[in-house]
Length: 524
Image 1 (cartoon, rainbow, N blue to C red):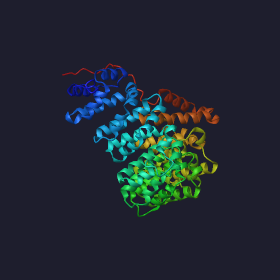
Image 2 (cartoon, helix red, strand yellow; image 1 turned 120 degrees about the vertical axis):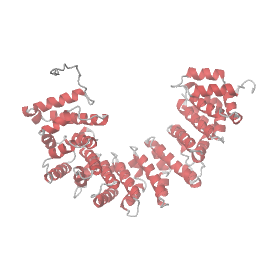
Image 3 (cartoon, rainbow, N blue to C red; image 1 turned 60 degrees about the vertical axis):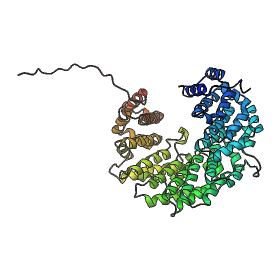
Image 4 (tube, rainbow, N blue to C red; image 1 turned 180 degrees about the vertical axis):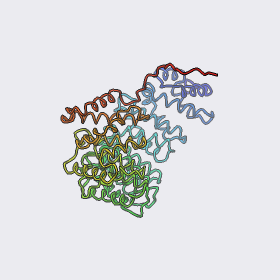
């Protein structure tokens, strides 16, 4: 058998190196042609003895990885599971990573996932993946986490990843108690990645009390770096649409509130805690699951922090405004910010039109754009009567206390600033024009319309798109108002907006034609 599958290591080294670095994606035919020349058992055998041939492992590992990522290569994996097991326990980190990638290919490329999961069970692959995650180098740990995430995404494999008994060696809580600090951080990161897969996987994580590991990591240490690492994981967890439901069942929200309120906490910790809390409250169902007292507490803590910092242009001040903007992005959140007494949104409005601090003004404009509804679907832009009255009052009061006098004056001053501020201004206008009082004031200001319909105002893609969406929002609000659309006074504005929308968001280049130049002749 060994003679049948023996290969010349020098030839394999050259061919594998060429195959690994071949440009573009590889076809099944390419993989078949390579393996016809170098049978897979021979390649695996050579890999196991690669220490005798310098450079062979570095060529064969990426070669096999590319082969297994093809449909044809993946179809061979079930026949070579013993090789996968040896690879997962190998001394070489390169080979370990290859084995983890091979498991991912088995799960994602194989057409019958039931067979793949059965093989994972039969050969005891999952404990070895966890070992790679905890003890491998950074690349091995990442490849192992990828494989485990694919495995956890299959309902049939839920029992493998989330065993019912905490006494199981593979139970993540049990494993976290025994591993090194680095291994524990990797396990926490894995839990967060699995949490984002789906609500059903998040439910399993919640049932297994795995989110409590994040709590415990913060509670049992005063190490700023450790707490910051956990907060970064919480920030990732908060991105999941279903995060509020499951976080509400833990003390994580209360921990965030404590960090925000703590004068002893490092500035960076308070900043991250504010943004994460805002992110959690930006979810549509947050106000359904997180109790009102917790929401009030975190909002009060953010307000107090902003009031203390409002004369500064600091990162912490900007984070407080970002958090308020995140909260205000949802209908319930915006209503809350505009309905408290006094309205918490007053801080955002004041900072949005304060030109003394650029960073703070930029953060506030984006936050006010969220509150005004730029990120919400059309039927959720306009809020309750009380909230709308307060929004109108706050903006008019701010305008009356400046030389701009009117909301349109404030908005014009925003559009006359640098591109970052202008883009935030487009977002704000996009949300505000759903209100008749703002629409009327804005279209009465020809300078604003001239800036908005000018396709040469912006030179960057994101700015062009924001300006175009702003024109669309104004025109949409304009035509939905029978009073304004039937008024001949504004007919030319409608035409300008239509033309700007028709041209699209990107720079409309003018036709350059050769022009004759006429000049007087030089005379001596």
